[in-house]
Image (cartoon, rainbow, N blue to C red; front, side, top):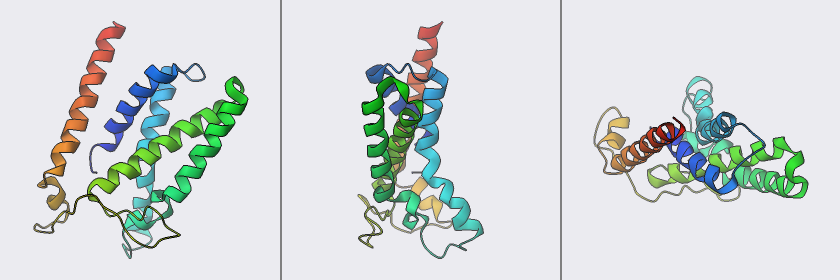
Length: 168
């Protein structure tokens, strides 16, 4: 995914806002936490470009592993359930790590992701993008899957417009 991580986080936040009716956080903090979590695994791009000299695909780094985010999510969820209204940190950690899991799932759509690292050193992807164009990112822009990203972005935009009209 190139452009749909933050919009997908917005969609997730909107869905969870309706389901959880959060009272531990302001609506702005709630949405911001989820949208930051939805983009956070790509912070490894700084390491990829500036320190690692692109020696491996950035989806091989630990921020794109289920083995990191699933335990964090489960621990935060358990703490939130056990301590309920008394733990804002657990609630934030649960939202953030859940959004990071969404990020990894979306990356797996057309990007090789080492989902089960460090236990299994193999990449997984739903749909392969054939290398036809230079620079490399044009292959993703001209692939049919980019339409899925545009639909995600359009849906998030529609939700945002509707929510702002409803608040006025």
